[in-house]
Image 1: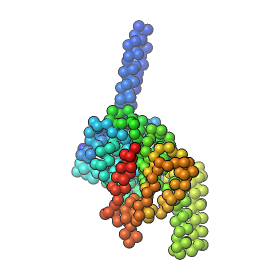
Image 2: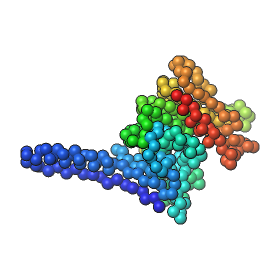
Image 3: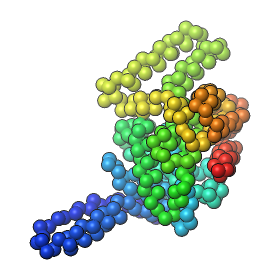
Image 4: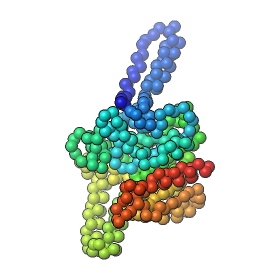
Length: 359
């Protein structure tokens, strides 16, 4: 059974040595520093799965991440996938020594692994492996509090800058490994993770290719207001009802931008951070960009406008692809509901992988 490793803090003890021991003291110091840096991470296979887990120390927490492989003896570029908004763990412990992957299971990993080492980072303040009893009905981590909501610790850490920082820590660590080909670095993200991926590409100049799925570059509130307007235009509600509903959203947004509100409502931290539009960052990137959304994903209706920003910046190395009939998670819509038995994630991701190999 997988045993989660925690890193012990290494303390370097200095002694007052006579002058003639200076050389030995210097050697001792260098060796101690090497041991310190060697012990700031750990790795292990995750149960009987085809994943290897890693743990590295950051300034505020231990960052857990996993690579979809069991033997790392082949040099390949890194593909880092950034998941969506909820604290879904990387793995679920279903009992009887069985660990189930939770994040990359929708993909054709065998095909992806032919070309890349595929990595995914655990959500902040979320254990990498979580027991079934510690998950909500939507399979995100709630701990043992009995609550149906994410933990307060997660809410406080759930902001875009933190995700970007954690990703860059992982990228820097892996870039020094013999099994990583650092001539190419692919970053991909879905939904909220797409916003994170844009930020990583903007800050980290080692990123060579960017993939965005279910990406909405606008203020988070814009999609909500657009849906309300759409209901009024479609006759589902009156314009008077739409006015009241939108006024309620404006009041909520004021709370989001009130510092005192954040102190008593930690979940607003994410709303403030991810409400900043990211299209200027995206349009300024010089690297190739691939964007894919489902036609039934109402929150991504603004995708049609992205080429306008690219054209203004003289950008030509991009693809914007629409998948007819698919929703936010690339499931087909049947009689108004997602058909979860016939998802298209594998085909969507494989098309991106093939595109990333073109140059």
